[in-house]
Length: 284
Image (cartoon, rainbow, N blue to C red; front, side):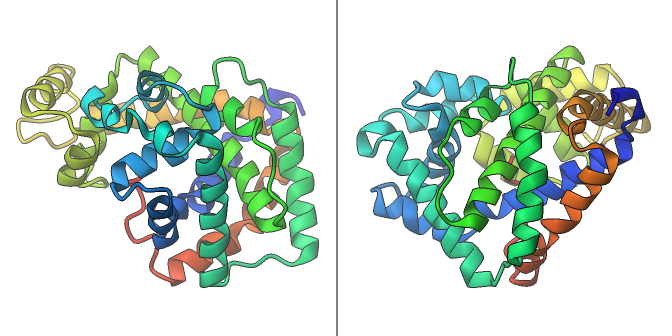
């Protein structure tokens, strides 16, 4: 399909679907349990190790660069985590956590749905351009597990990280640094400020400076709440990200993207029903 024929609404819809179907891994108790089995009980360090394991035993500075909106002090905490267990064991533990969690909540696709979903997402993953897409490329290099549903979930992870990688380029192009973009997110009220501060660990001076920069642009008001101009800027950034992602979904087109979104919905539905996704929006 020619990119000009791809509906950006379809791109946005399938992007939301893959993010929702991927998100449970950051909240499911199985993740904490598998991290504990590897000797790590700190949830922040476990998150960093699980998500960056696909890149291999990289220094914490590489993880910081790939994750963007975390402060150096937050990511520095993972220094030495590969001595506790190598990345291969973290990746295997992540797959096991995903399998256990999906089994617990009853997330199921029929054999026919699995086959169809894989026929669509495999085209997307195989046809993707990974230039500049570090986390997506790393996840695409991981051998798929034997469990069919977990293998599908890993392909979803590739597409999810591809959009995330593209989004970081758009943020930088719009002059939104790591702390700035986080402050703007919390200004919407979607992401609680206390949670963002606790997990990303920007200090008071850094947070205030980012808020001041956004206020100068007219994107937040004196109470650090988002303005109409700020909301318009956030939407423009999302549209620009959709435009980047059009190439990703071009191999299966509008119909394929929408069909894939519907096929993976049972994963999200199962975790929503189980109450696992009540904190949606705080993982990234």
